[in-house]
Length: 298
Image 1: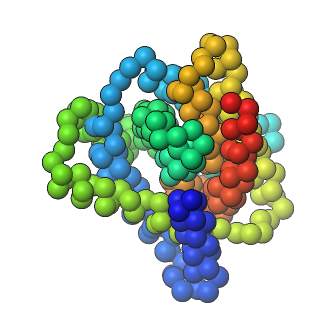
Image 2: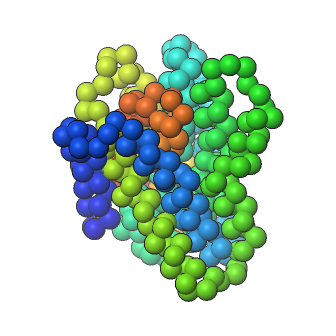
């Protein structure tokens, strides 16, 4: 329960700070940079080495990447059909595809399915969405925010030097290797800053009223993320006849709200910041209802 309270409280605090003009206008961008360059790498270094592999571990990885691939293609198709701008398309390619599989996934799925779900949650999150954020995410942000001709060499350098991606590579080298307590405690303290800082940043950028031209992409993004994505996961599970905890976790993860860090990346890259923040903020609030309904089907 305290996790849900923290999520809602942090968004409300951010929104209140914005309305009262207490923080400067660039505060949200600064907080987003802190999350992406400091908090997120610390979490990756802390969590990835704890993983161990089994056949069931493959299920969340497969479902995560299939769901993300299909929703990305669907998002791109709809964006082209409706002639969305490059900035809006880039924003949707991030927030309608990448899920909030850790900040919300851990407390929500643990509450519904128990603490035994944690290994599968971490696999879906780290090998699925976090890896996608560090590769696909930076590619999308670079491609859609670039106003001139795309230089793939420069883009590759950005991907390979992106702090979360570098942290992932380092962390993969330490799988199964326990860190000393002092290192784990420091990483844990820094990693724990993700949720409050990222959510306050969302609140700072949250707009309760959107311009009419942003309502359509807003609705489409949330429909794809909260309805279509978990339906794809359910179809995969049904086809393969998987009836285990890993499959249930994967369905719930697919139905999580848009990833906070994806929204931060979109905003930082100038990809419709107001729209991106609205999709993330409202997506979190709406997902409390949609995940409850989703749980009834599994």
